[in-house]
Amino acid sequence: MTDRARVEDVHELAQAMPYVTVEEGGAENPVYQVGRKSFVFFRTPRPDAVDPDTGERYTDVIVFWVESENDKQALVQDPSTPFFTTAHFDGHPSVLLRAARIGELTRAELAEIVQDAWLSRASKRRAADWLRGRGKSPG
Image 1 (cartoon, rainbow, N blue to C red):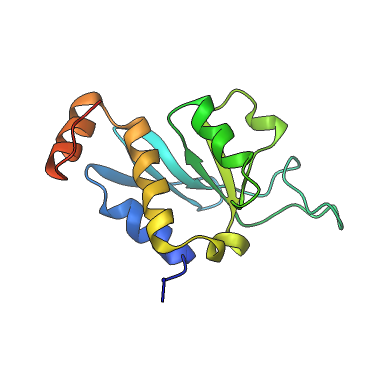
Image 2 (cartoon, rainbow, N blue to C red; image 1 turned 120 degrees about the vertical axis):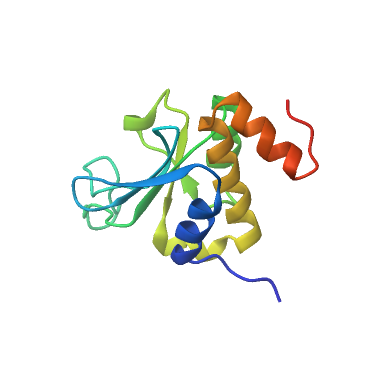
């Protein structure tokens, strides 16, 4: 049986990456950073991410950086993924995920998203070192 992803996994996976610090957002929401650059954060409720039926702001949005617009579009345009975006994030290299839908991913899929988010924000040297340590060629 494949392990379904949980919100706790986001924290564990992000903290397991090298050189990670955790900052607190204005609402005490965790913001995971590498080299002072955010790569995953728990977003506060905003008017651009709302329930289409009730108009209530989503309180459980997680933001993941991505490498490029192509990577973003591959995730948000694939109806089999729970990722989405809003007009607020047009031109921003990130995708959104509601915690309520995180179980639609496996832990392994979530790990890849978190690792890719980290790689998109880490320095070239840190990214290359991490990839080499995993037996992968940088670039």
